[in-house]
Image: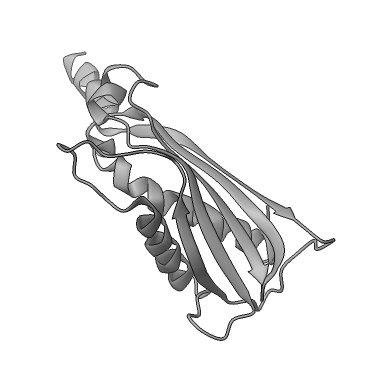
Length: 171
């Protein structure tokens, strides 16, 4: 019985959970993207208003999102720095780094939140935009770096939505 209780406690200490959402909204009558499309990453903005305190380790929120997106597009073979037909501009709408200890004590307290709006454009014409929301709401030790990892999670969701819109994976 003690071993089972210990294992259960370890699961709660090490595990983490949250949500991932993404949605592509097309403009100008478009309904899909070509399966052979390659993407560059254009501008990155942070309009979240979040400011790190002097005691916190600081990151450039917009640059972190841009780097994560370039890395994920590259990993999936969809990135091309120059000469692409499509570019993606990212805007971080909301960012809250949260607190792993708070999530461990009470799920929902200390949640890490990242909301990103990504504009997909062909040349300078908007094709559509992708809205993503990623959260880490509960967990313990496993979620300690979530305030940085959430950028990679958002990039994965953006690329997943692009691949769904290209017909490369089922929705």
